[in-house]
Length: 380
Image (cartoon, rainbow, N blue to C red):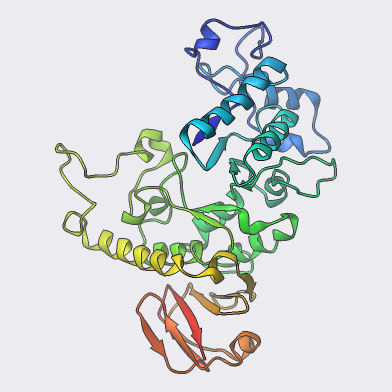
């Protein structure tokens, strides 16, 4: 369930009939948040900037709730517990996690999880850098001692890297190197495997639009999303290459999935209703997801990667029972000599191409088509 504690609408019943003067933050005139959540961590932040971030309104029709009011704070906590008990939800996606009162949000998460120990809370932490994101992860070793108590955070640094990695030329820092550099920052997270990773969502331009309508880039991206560390999230319609740009308005990014209603001109729930390209994306994603379901090595296995070279990025997911090799080739087709990967290939003689269902009979040299991902389940 999506929840928002930072703000509500002007027409909300407890705004129309406000319980107390300090229920929301008031200013002499409309004052908007500066949306700079980094001030929570910035050692040089001014009190002015902190005030705007914490107490400014989200928009002209979205008053900012004051969680320092003890009655509002208790109401919000009890409201969450009521929804969990009433509806049986097993997770909450908390909107704008860094915007409400910081200490209250930690208390809220602690009390919810104390009541429901197996419950999960994902905090939307829309931040640019890894260190800023890691600060909000539950049990992070923060210099100020702050603990959000969250189960998971949204990994926006990984999202930003994925929107560029598959459509730009490779260099020391660009292309696939972007993915590598984000992952090298995982030492800042208590458990990066719990990070929520995604190609797009309801607030972002559609991924297929961002990668310039390149099907090969989509296949590489979805392969990475579903085999790297983290908990993947898929936004409806990404699997059929739905498009939409933020600059054209959020309604453009949140169009209904075509089909299911008599008035719909196309039904993309069926292969017949999808274009050839859409079916190719759908089938590729479907195969990968169905394979992933029964692979604990992808869910919880360790990740080891090798520094990207010549437009090729190789990583392994491994545990005591199995090993999966992933090769991302951002350039022309090539035969890859695998000697440098011997620490993971020793003892394995063959590999199963997960997408094609075909076995590769030798692993000394592996052919990888241009602009593609090769996912191999290693076999002895």
